[in-house]
Image 1: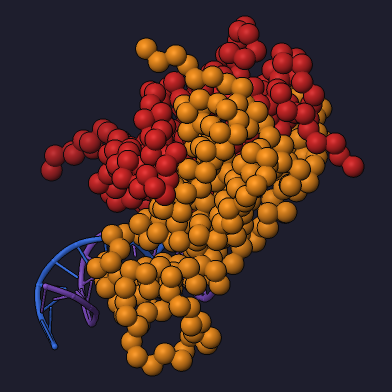
Image 2: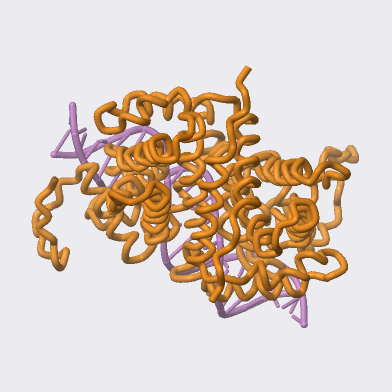
Amino acid sequence: MVESSEPRSRRDRPAKPPLSRQWIIDVTIDIMRREGLKKATMRRVAAELETGPASLYVYIRNTAELHAAVLDEVLGEIQMPHDRPWQEEVEQLVTAYRDVIVRYHGLARSALVQRPSGPTLFAVFDRLIELFIDGAGISPGQATWGADLLLLVATANAAEHAPHETGDTDTGMSADEELDALFAAVRASTSAKTPYLAAHADALLAGAPEQRWEWTLRAQIAGIVATPQPVTQ
Amino acid sequence: MVESSEPRSRRDRPAKPPLSRQWIIDVTIDIMRREGLKKATMRRVAAELETGPASLYVYIRNTAELHAAVLDEVLGEIQMPHDRPWQEEVEQLVTAYRDVIVRYHGLARSALVQRPSGPTLFAVFDRLIELFIDGAGISPGQATWGADLLLLVATANAAEHAPHETGDTDTGMSADEELDALFAAVRASTSAKTPYLAAHADALLAGAPEQRWEWTLRAQIAGIVATPQPVTQ
DNA sequence: ACCTGAACACCGTTCAAGT
DNA sequence: ACCTGAACACCGTTCAAGT
């Protein structure tokens, strides 16, 4: 653990920074937190470190690797739950995972493309498998595939809910406005061509986001526990 | 002077192309098919249309909208299954959806960020709701949320399986090589810190991709059917 | 009214050259 | 040996100006 002497104004550092892998990651997270993933570019990070972009390539292979490193670092914020019934622990752990990714807008995109594989992710993964095997009493096959599926769903959900930064700030369309747009599109869809969608648009758009996430999690767990793996030949 | 017969491949169009929204979309799909989503940029599309990039903005608001339009266009390839038991139809439809997105590498990323909402997607959505309500006999709430969840999982799965084009061609790391890397990472993870993962690495990595997808689909359907919605207050 | 050349403000990555 | 200035090859988007 590093003794965190917070640089409170970030300008009170006259000497040039160490320029290590960790320092690069920290600066990247800082930019992301303040201005979004979109601004956390190689060039921007290099500028913040008062050097040229080429220097970063001594420590980081490319942008994808930088984002992956940032993701695992940030996953460290997850609080592991304890002493709860196994279902509750699974739900809390996966929700915590999702929330971290949502918090760092846009990181979800990286997570879906370049699978996170750092130590923190592995710890969460391990705990989920444990809960499934010892708590739910399902087979290692179901438990491991289930844990994987749960993290995939959490990441995808986070990607949907993250504000999409297209321009300097928003798309000019907030997540809420976009929901309204979807609402309108669903309603406008000709009843003749999509009768079920038209008839049940209310049902589709009902419920608070938390209720919906709760249901999603429960459906995942129920499905994972109830579905045996195909027989391998 | 010899009358130079133009190379017939795509140069046999002496008049300038119409330059409509549809034409832009078609050219974009063509580039994507040949060189990947990464190459299907505004500038590149404009160049292919022998005009400046500014001209595209008369018909398309921005890059995100272009990709969304392309996605819905491409979704037209989906074959709707018929006259099968409802579970089978759900599985085939969702698999077809996923396969289309996988086929256009990288499109999955757009799909997760900017929710596809074209007529084709709505048609698939409608059919899924129908199958759930009339086939499975579940509530409209479960049916609509379930259909939404299924498409989310399919999109996320496609995003994972799509080759990530980081450079001109590959990342220098194919999907297979990456799986090997993950395998190695899982194995290398200290048994002391992640004992369950270490003990069940084989189970995690077992099974052919199709078997795994099959299991994922069945787990989704089982969970959706078995999980009632929370009571709305 | 419709279209677009040219400019603005950026990117990632490489490599020859410096210390 | 380690680092980086400068270059290469691109981006998305805007807007004043042309037809």
